[in-house]
Image (cartoon, rainbow, N blue to C red; front, side):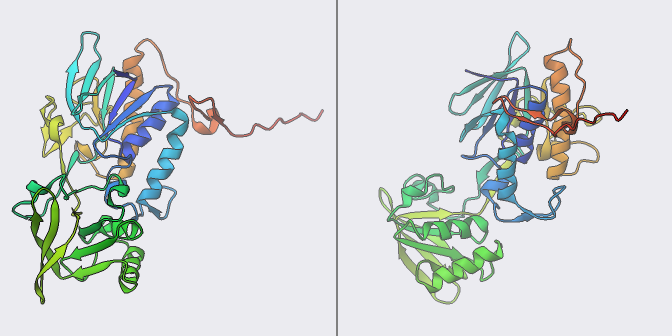
Length: 351
């Protein structure tokens, strides 16, 4: 069983920043996320899209923001349970919580912070009649290990950053990469669009636009896809893998069954104090929560994380009074023994 001070459900930007704020209070943290890597949507859906409303950064790529947050929290040595979904929660006799994932991993903490963005994510699946028959038999919705596609034929469908970026990456891994998109225009970063166009000219990516994959063929494993083109009609394409990358659909998932007060698919919290839910000890921060005046912004999640950690400290140590010290004064002391602080100058009096 994994024990920690604050169990954070969701490893997006808000969840990651919670590690930093908790670390300043000497509180240990552990994060659970259903995705295979930290960063939430910023890593999974739009890592190369610029964000313009992060204080101090006129412009920063979503993926770079995640990298910076990971670097910022490194001294506080957080634990991660990735690729697993928080499934059940149980209040124990000692007033702590037991959270179990869909794979049976158990976590115990006196405080649970739900920072799951818009909730758990499920892939948006194209309306192909027999697509369920080929899941794990040639159809995948998320690329977890690119080496699976080494020297294989791959058909990717989609027009966003994920489809573009993986087409570029797999061009040097797979024996053949085909990108299918129903429009001529793409929704991804301009440099990615230009790179795919360049790879298409070089013959490293088969680019098929104004088309959709409508049929999957094979017996024990996928062997071909049927593509419907706007002007060329039906096209038969042999392949080993079909990867539709149409983004992820947010849902509260099992968290919606935890007895929390839900309002419009979000968790209602007490925003006048500490973003605690109707269950003492369980907090909700970031896009997953709702309250009067709520703004679904990353910077709002950062603010909520700081307030929540102060409340969590008082819950864990009710007899201690914490006096907040600014990092400009006290510096940052990590659990790994590192110390960051401003240089102190000695001023000698002149007599």
